[in-house]
Amino acid sequence: MQHNHDNFLYPYKTKLVGMVVAGISLGMLIFHYAITPIILVASKDASVNGNYFHLVLIVALYVIMNSREKIEDERIVFIRGKALIVAYRCIMILILPGFLASTLVDGVSSIPTSSFSTKILVYASFISYFTSFYMSFYFDKDLTSSNYTSFQYELRKKGYIHWFYILLGIGFLTYHFFTK
Amino acid sequence: MRNTIRVERAKLGISQEELAKHVNVSRQTINAIERDKFIPSTILALKIARFFKVAVEEIFVLEESD
Image (cartoon, rainbow over all chains, first blue to last red; front, side):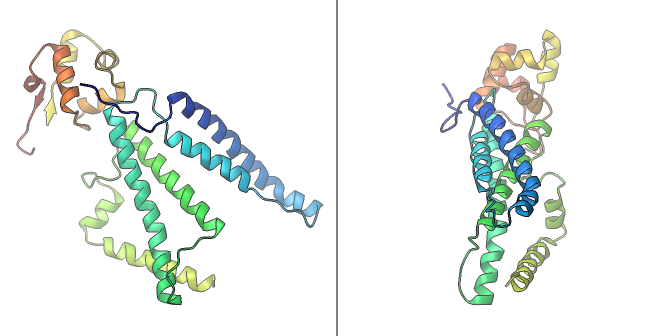
């Protein structure tokens, strides 16, 4: 009986390429933002756009996320699934309060779709995915389980979890008012 | 569920790395199973038991809390 653990995943070598590309694009991005003020001072109408570097970095991170590990076994498949759940929750936590805020305040249901908010969503999902994956991979810390003494678990146990979401919602509403 | 993989390994004098190679998983997976942080699938449990030439129930033991 065989288990196929590599469905829809790129080979391990692709991950290595992705890591190199991600490193280079991150370096270019840092360099870009470091020299942008200098360019703007030098030529007043210079149109400086770092979106190309963001795009390359996002693609590289996506490739890393969807590549096999060196030894792909059932535990890796398991923790990858858990990490995807964490990333999904992170996106929902970021989207829903904004969605709720726009509905309550403007009466129009709209999700923020600016380039900036899209980048935040994408990077937040990657950060939460990789944090969860490598915490589980190296330290066996499961961010989705309530068996562990985590911040979220403590909040749940003490019944404060509702306040956490209420405060989050108030925060987004306040942000919405002040940035209008 | 607790297990006696560490004991069985000690009897044979083999490392986690060697056991991992024999059952086609990573060393971290064997380590996680030994520390009861990960419960293996039936297939992996059977492979481990076959490697040690013992019944699977001798290695993986259900506890009252399970």
